[in-house]
Image 1 (cartoon, one colour):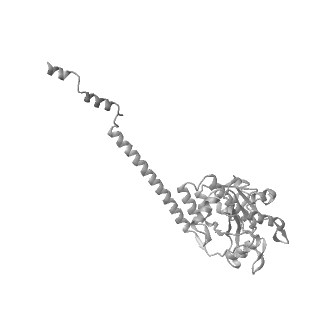
Image 2 (spheres, helix red, strand yellow; image 1 turned 30 degrees about the horizontal axis):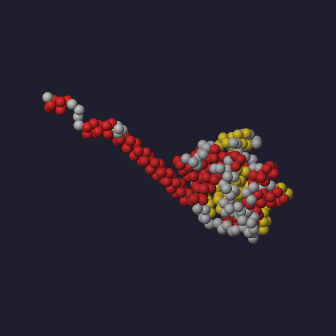
Image 3 (spheres, one colour; image 1 turned 135 degrees about the vertical axis):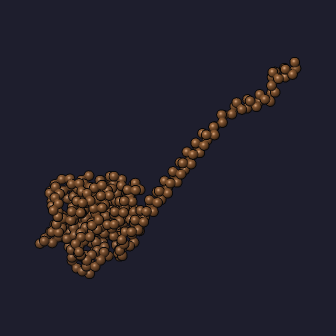
Length: 338
């Protein structure tokens, strides 16, 4: 009887204590759930590593493309007088035109804080004082000497410190236009270039039509230069509005197409070229002001209207191109369709 009572009676108190302790513990996670969690965490870690590697690889490839941009030796003297605002940058931008002639002559200026900037065009037929050469059309300066002489001439004319020099070859413009998906430009009247008709109003340009647009009749110098200016503005607007430089894959294609068209001074580093491309993409809409230095014509010769142009050069030096354009709206360069 006592044996029966021992088996069916109350168990050892220590036994209840162990059960109570186990009851107070959270249920143990199944082994399968733990394995799934480890797989998820490992997968996420691998994804982060691969994403980082892709970003680094994209940067290295873009840097490689920038290294392929043709460099040319250019002497850039320092302008005397007041220094430009810290962080501001001015690039003398030109284009390849007829042999011995420079098509576009533009000062691309980025304000000190990179939030605004402007593009100031100088009419290539403008007569200016060229160091050691007398008075000449500014479009002929590079042929008289080299890019260094053109830089010196523009600095002497404007008293603006030029930081870098760049030249565009519009031969490759069609590829860039295709890469960015085409652009829209607006014409005041119908024009015909090499047999292709561009109508008044908005025209959508692709890789085939863009070269015709920038190569108007050789006799129409002013029209060709305005078209080149308008096309560059349309390209900047397109790159900015579509955020084409923020996606690694798209940025590589855009930079590759731009690199094939550019020649820059030998002091222009890869990081500066990449930074300039990024900053250019911000000069769309109200952030970028496009003006042309005012001129007048006498006896078939083009001269600067110095009473106004002197104020323009001062506006570049003080990061106030937009304020200048508001005061002299007639200087605004005809723009692209937005």
